[in-house]
Image (cartoon, rainbow, N blue to C red; front, side, top):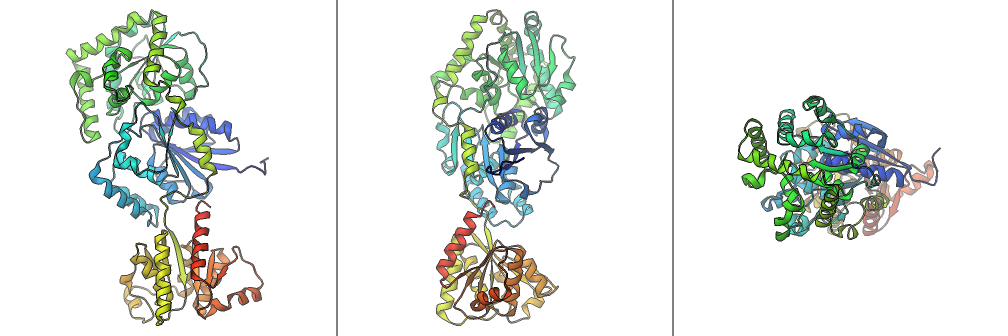
Length: 611
């Protein structure tokens, strides 16, 4: 039975499908949240390697669903938690959910200054989006790195995982992300304990990603097994040698080397294996390197699988030139880059293709580069027989890469828990739509014109779009002035098309509207469609049609803000409500001052952003 004093929270989580790193961080976070917030329900939505990893750790989630192009019902969720999946943040933000974005590669993204204005313009356009399809259309030409920027900007809170060195955060993009919190390495250290170090672990992660398909992944495995062939043969005489990867890849490579146990590991099993390993061989993925550092297990860096691995490796030195020179002595490796000077290109895809091409070449040749890599691996043979040297190596690696960094940053769970408790909306808000209902009568009085022009401008400054019945009068004064100040003006016409609409003198020009909907089923059908799209209504003056729109909104529970003093039914609405003897789902608020009405309307919209 639910504790009535607790606020139960339903979280939709996801992770980027790029190897196992992002989802492994998510599972660590979910495990802690389940302990700290036992009244939470956490579902997972994802695809590819992220889905595979979530399924391996299914006990942590209440429900796991493969993303098949369809998102769940947004009304079922209170919060979106994403580890580097920007799309789920865009979905959550559009539906006005709290969004917490966790980014372990925040310092790595290559943002180009010349597209900064374009991205900011896209964000501004997103605030006007009226459908998810419009959201996807606006971002369809934005590449992955820049999508991360947009996700950071739209999130309620962004968490950047600490990695050695922070000087890269000085660019114009990172300066513009105001909701960022740097957090400590996201690692579950609960399995760290004294254990017999009887294992050599070759951790290859998920291998599969949008840029590394099965063919490229198999090619990479081939190179790793080829350069480590002698090492594995000798190490297997003294240790159990395990190769861990995704279930899909494990099936394909089982039996390729009789000295290796090829398997797939859940997050718990992975951490327990690292804890009992004397040495880990791994690409320079942030997650595995941090896990080894935290569990004080020494690691050897395998060749790059993608463009991020070499920068990850260099980052272990924190940007210190002297420490960069010392890297190979602290973190022995068989990296490609130092041997072939594979200079980073502007476009990440080009870099990855270069790496893939080089790995393919290594598979079929035993050239100088290959022999150098193999020699570096074989240098480990003497080391694995000296357990004291392995312990010393692990301590040196941890001190070199982390130092006392853990004491300077926040814990990601504490940040997320505070984010759950917050009620204020994110800095960048999807624009609310407020409907204006009034008479279709032209306004002649200059004072009245100035007042409602001013009201429209004020609402636009606070991120409000305006919807009207597409007629002239006070409604159009407010709507047109809001449009002129940057908001969208949306019209709902009871006419069949633009031609019939234009023939009626009390209709506003269609050129004044950003969007105009035509409904040929009559005024009531038009009014119902109109009112169903708005977050609140402002009622001023009005005749029978305005009264009809009021009653629809009243019955449907739409918040209605009424301005008295301009004649018409709005001046008599309190009598009508009293005579009808019905309170309504949301009691209307009545004002005689336009400024006070606007203040209360904006306060209502802000305080109900997440509801």
